[in-house]
Length: 581
Image (cartoon, rainbow, N blue to C red; front, side, top):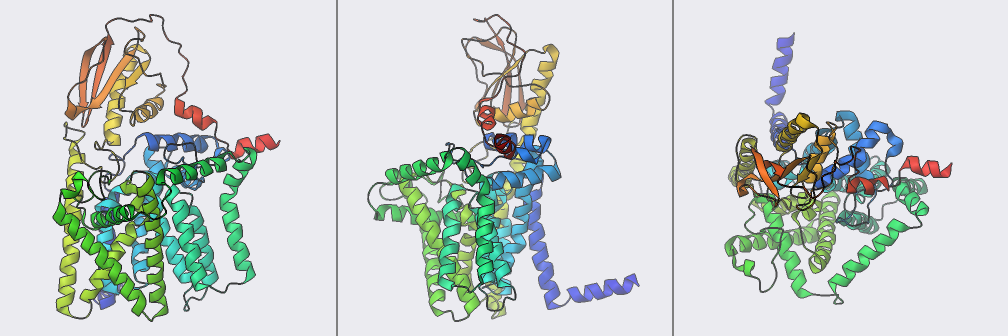
């Protein structure tokens, strides 16, 4: 019996549809592998990740009532977004464990789910083979892969943007049996998306509102009322927080917007900034598709008229701009010529996605420094833009054209896979030897990618020294990673002590200087090195004070870290109800 079932299964696979499903499944599996391989040991875990864990972890330990009413802060300032990301991280940690990996699993899962979602989103317009080709780029894109391998609120944007707009397209489809359900699903997703990042707060809702206004779907009053209820419920924590704090967070939003406006200047139209914003888009779209960062450089800076960096890599930059403008032209032509309602809706939404995000990037380029993470908003669109050009090859019209299409897709995949392999190879060597710097500033602003495995090994070393004498631990290191070490040490009962001063310190203490191993050993005045250990890109130096200006022993009680003091002031559901009582 089972032999017959196997034969039937193999027979189905041997059909055209079966082979297509196998191809799609294989590409998705490749994407999953790149996103999940050695996920825990190579996890990126620095100040932002520790900050989020320190907020969510007490909720896991003490109950859901301790969830905050506000979410992550904006740009290190006092303004906070809605708490959607913290709630997502809470569910992740509750299911997968209250560990750095457990807190990051929601990002990994949503990035994996974005793979099939990207394919079915593309199928709203592109042919089967064109969609498969674009999925292959999306699955192997270095940009998409690297941002899916650690916890950070912007990292869930590709999935949420795709789901928001996929549901929106389904809601206006003349063929859809339950358009109202899809509309409410889109409202839910867009509202969640607006709480994830300051940029998405404006982009996702504006696109959805304009698209809906253009299409004017005819829903009954119950659907519209349900949509308003969904928005109100999701934003109820933010509303309640401001009611109790007399609009404190909303006032900070006003201040943030005024500062942005002030930095942007009075001119409403600035051709130089428009050119700069176009360059940002062209170079970053090119990077998302090819993994080649020679155009975008570090932190996407020094663009526009008259800059030194503009004369570097002129060939690649010119190619990126040509491809970008060609894709825009292809989109415009397709939008004018397309007659099919469903396909035209896809093009209209893509155009709005670009125009609204471009307006945002124009504002940012005029007022602030640009970072590659801003383009998580449009990372799926960057690959879809490639599709607007590649569709002219006519991938399904002839074997020759299909072969050319396959060669181009294979080349783009190879460029991304080669870069991913290089990064993985360097990361794999880190726990054993002092590796050279891994340049990943094209992904996020950190030229020294420290893995969680290295941090654990360094923390274990410091713990071993502490266990020898039980003296307080003092750490000096790069500010981004100090919270990570205190988090790991705190799990073993070694609590935070203030950073030691080179002139004021205790005679009895365990002093550690943590630097990048490739830069060589460092030093601190009034201290001598007792021992030095290397853990990949980290060098941990165990120091001994030559003399002490304060000889009394510090108090044994735990000091509260500055970031925890800030967290303690966050309003939670428990505090809210306590005030009510």
